[in-house]
Image (cartoon, rainbow, N blue to C red; front, side, top):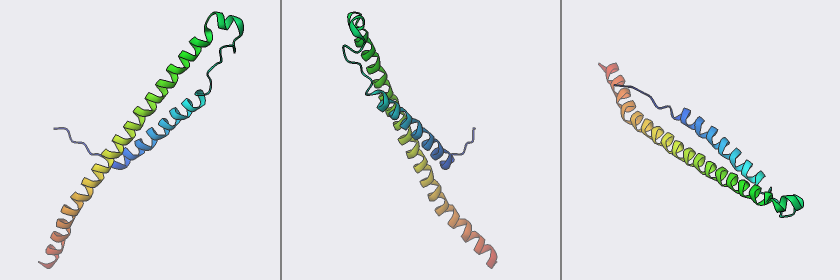
Length: 112
């Protein structure tokens, strides 16, 4: 049987890291959101070859992927935070139950 221990503070450190990464994705999206080209930005040849439309389509794809990545990272942040909260709650419950028993046993041992 495999034994493992969950360390809520380690989970919370990962939550902080993922949150920072999610914010970086949001910042990248915000920076790129205003980079669309107008039809005549690349002149006559750009218009004839439809370069502006291809560029804007590619930019829209990038913006969509950045949004999707941001949402996925935020979901991971929320899930890890919930897991850390759950394990901290369990630790507190176990301490309340078993810590009380241990202190009771210690005090009984002293009176004997």
